[in-house]
Length: 146
Image (cartoon, rainbow, N blue to C red; front, side, top):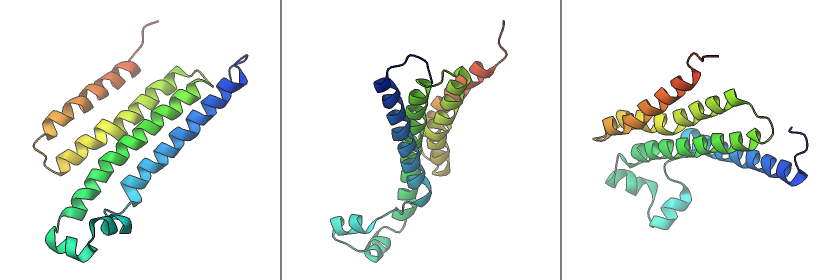
């Protein structure tokens, strides 16, 4: 912990870390656990799961992919929010590159991969940010001159 940092700044940093961890967990919930449709979704639409499955047989699979992308962006945001809070406590420059790499993997990387799995018309366009992000991370970890 940085010496001389006011107590309210330390508390704020820990709160950011907690919020980031919550976002990370929420993102993983959307990626790995959340079903395509919750009972409340069906109630809102005034239908049941069987009627939707009959009318739209691919809906659940598509929604699963949508929630994977959305969860990736939540989790990636959580990584960055946690890192920013932690940065207030530690000051580790290598951790910044690691946080940026993990954020890119969870956000633009996961989005690009899902769009390739969907054979999206925009898959190649959506791969561009992933390529740029990867190049930036590689540039950060490349050999440094003294």
